[in-house]
Length: 564
Image (spheres, one colour):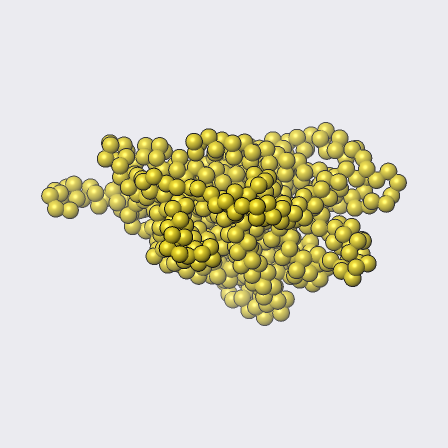
């Protein structure tokens, strides 16, 4: 810093340290509260309300139990589905973005719909379709010597792949592919590389940060998934990490020490994954959109594209619309799942639900909760991403690790941690039982995927565009708002919709924090399902799905305008 006076140098250093402190403080406030709760109580032999009784009883009792070890093994076994998911999602994303596939819009919308639907009703739909004793599909397949069984490892993997893993991975990878200039692939073909070698040596290395982010998100979400495993795993004695923790918490008396010990183990696994991600992406960041003219031409596969389109439409028809049709049909049934009784269909359940004041209150809560979480969340994630990628302030590495932590805590224990915080921290007590507390919890839960997707988009935008704006006299915020944000609009829109949907369908994180006046539709749906009112639960899940699809269509149209 030659030519800079000592006073100016001192102010510069002070500003850098102030920004670093602010970044780390913000990352800590966002990520650490539930993690601190877990760590403090991982050596607590009593219950979390007494922080002064310490010991390793939870560790000894937890890992000495064979059921716990089996649950951990099943969790990692089921998480291998992410390898199938990322491979299928990458190929599907490439076909939808880079190839002129007929019905592309329909296929993409179908993937959004699959992700929007709550997991619990979809699992119920597959039970009605594939139960070995009364499943509709088995009525036709059993005479041919084929019997489907959703109560198995294969059944759980199938439901996850079709309902969430492949759809969300495809949704997250498509914006990254849209920001990748086709000239890179054209140059590869000019050099004599075929499609496979272009995939291997061009697309996969350039998109490695995005692929790794999506894969890690899938692994972490797979390890903490709960509802499908609870419904389909119990009949086959398949217990996973999350259901084991749920059992330990809901037992009488609850085994908090063992549950929190298992969560601490989960936290350690995530910490290793986060360090690996940070080391991997630090050396592999590529700008794929620069200030030069960009080419985004699609590949014309000739008549083969109709065959590809037909296969994709058939796949989404079986994996998405067949269970959705069953779900809608079940919502209009007198008794859910009974097709052979007299007068099996009625709209009485719809009328009862729509006229219920509790439903109307819950619907309003869901709208407020989803919009507030999505708007505030995208803003916070964008600022974090900018600070981590476009600045050189100290502490970025630590902040990167901190921002992965919310996914280290299973949803139900995250809710328990925030409940403890809201009840014990005096100035936070007024937040307990309010929608603002739910917004805080949900923003924290989606921090990893939101921030790291924004980071990936920032790394794909050449910094020369921002330098040009700064040379023209624009400040950093104006440059961010007018230059960078419009260029990463597809990713921001995807994050907005994903956070919105995650907020209105979340159960695990908010179930311990909601009250009668703040209950969202997802909690009301769960209460109906656990109470045996599957008709009402199906109706609410159908409403959630159609409402979410409407928001997705609106944001998709808005996003298209932003890219013009």
